[in-house]
Amino acid sequence: MNVPRLPRASVAVVLGTRPELVKLAPLIHELGPAARLLHTGQHWDEAMSGRFLRDLDLPHPELLTGIGGRPRAGQIAHSLDQLDAAFTRRRPAAVVVQGDTNATLAGALAANALDIPLVHVEAGLRSFDRAMPEEHNRVMVDHVADLLCAATPANAANLRAESVDERRIAVTGNTVVEVVRGRIPDRPARTALLATYGLRPDTYVLATVHRPENTDTAEALRAVLAELDEIARAGTPVLFPMHPRTRAAVERFDLTALLRRITTVGPTGYGEFLALARHAALLVSDSGGIQEECTVLGRPLLVVRRSTERPEAVDTGFAALVRPGPELGETARSWLADTPRRLARLAATPSPYGDGLASTRIAHLTTQLAQPAPIAA
Image 1 (tube, rainbow, N blue to C red):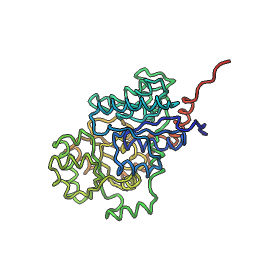
Image 2 (cartoon, rainbow, N blue to C red):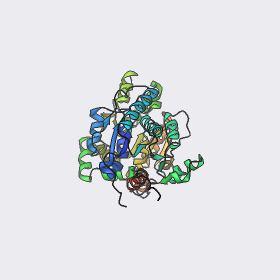
Image 3 (cartoon, rainbow, N blue to C red):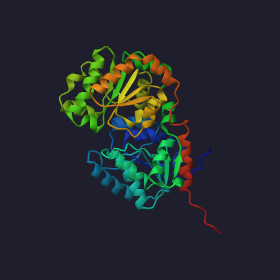
Image 4 (tube, rainbow, N blue to C red):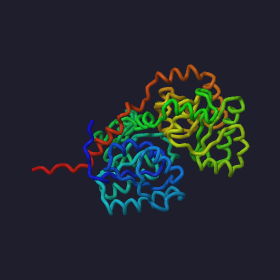
């Protein structure tokens, strides 16, 4: 599918977090010079975000100021104010947002206020958990977007159930498939990486935890770390790349003793994380993106959350939803005991997120939306 070219910097791509950089990278590449990146700074520091930009071959974005570190309402309000000014100064032909972050909502509201066509990538996700701020964001964005790019038929069905006009919905697949396939290092590089950590394929646990429900209280974080510690004590290596938020919480709650048997490292680059995940016997995470990536990598995942907006990984056998504490530990031990059969089964199970052509489809639809309709004679 050939994507027609739009004028330079005519499609504003609004993002604010590292997962958005990852998910939108192939679409930005498809749009080429037409893409204009605006980063709200919700997750920005040069060490982490800069590394992701380099890993993903993305240009440096226009950075909004004074957003990071504010409470949710402040982030949205300040982002909206600056995006409104940026779009007024140089009006885009279309605005693209992805997912359910505060940046997503701010970009959607700014586009809607100025009557600029809006594309929502990864539309139709629903956890049906009103306690999740992300659920508020994604529902509101879906109801103001002009083009809703649903990753799966189930996501599209969620939109129809909310009376969204069928003409606004397109099932495109998820860009995560092409991101993972395109960014995972080759086998020799993966083998060398595992050697630097002293790890062997299919014998270790890779864990990440960063969501507020697992890091905002000592009880929740202790419940996760204690089970990871037990896994390590029983002889299975646990590698734990720590988000700055999580590291700060561990220190604040005086939980460092629970990390003695766990190998902790700083945030990894995206390719490095994919390589480590590709050979893990088990993934443990509260990340939304990893719920999708595990289906492309063929690895089992325990999702440490009370709800998920991505049931596809659970429904196809890649993942299970568990609560912090004994349920996490018991399920992890059960799955680890069944590693060879589980990995063989998952290797034969296709990802529910599509064929790896999502970004091409989305770019084509975005281009159609951004091009003005011809004036009738």
